Image (cartoon, rainbow, N blue to C red):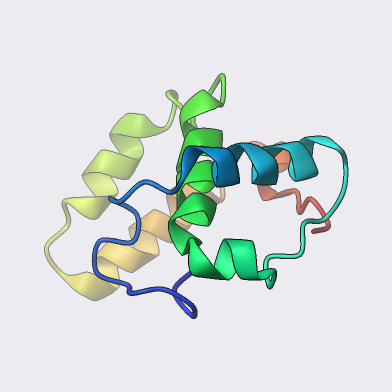
Length: 104
């Protein structure tokens, strides 16, 4: 997304609904969509819109309700090095399925 789009605001702007649905159908059909297709490159917002929708529709957030307070505490640490160490510690507590790579 960042390679082909204007990074500022790319995740705030919505893509064309028909392109988002087309892309969703390709993923739902167990295919790896070709994100280099002109339709997706010309409407890079459809890719970011579908990505946002995917995370919004998860039954349990990627960073989980159970670890929310720990993540909030970690990102509140003022010193960058200590903050990164704490975030990595909390990430290690995530369930294994959260690390799974889908293969696309």
